[in-house]
Length: 321
Image (cartoon, rainbow, N blue to C red; front, side, top):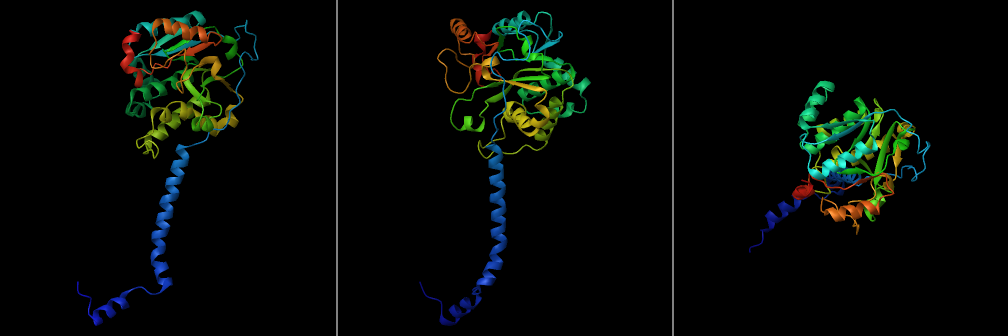
């Protein structure tokens, strides 16, 4: 390859930026832009790795009311399914709530009931609710509306009531349970466990449920790509337990006088994190295994079987039929 002739080479040298100050001035905008992008990504990542500080929880069997006293007037037990026809296992578990709360009104909400309820009672929220991308998000959010509008107890259909617990509700405006998250970084993030929306009690008109709906609306209006998962945030983050955890973290000073948080052994004694030799999630247990699991946690007031028929457990629905 021929070298540039001397005059041409001298011309190129004159065109080079020799002043350090000039090079800095020209490179500064690019540096600032890079720092801004890095700062934004770091902030996003920190939000996705959000730490939820320990929340005060009530110890098992320690309450402010007598276990023999009912303590609260009859209310509602809310459950939800796509139709009025329940799979066999869900029907059995649903009946357990009638045994525990025989004087309460039991309401099974179908998909059609839910749509009609939101449209009539919360018309401003209805367009957002209809636009939520998955069915579980609509089911998650409508349960907050049951509790705000009517009060009562919401229980997932894959939960079973083992013992009546009216006394646990007596001195609380809102009751939430939690679930163990095992060990590792998830346990570091959530030292109190993962607050659940699978079993909730409320008196009517509690602010936490309005805050929950406002949070659902906010997230629905600005869906962001997750840096951790390479996808949009999961349903748990948009309408479910992680959304509730954010509300509790943000507003605990105002909620703490009315919200009672119970430890996992009350209502959610085994977790989908890790493994339990007696219990399996995703509707993977036989009838005998279910009985073994139930006996293992018979000291709890309720048990959640984590069938996840809306996601990973859908392929095992035949067991529930």
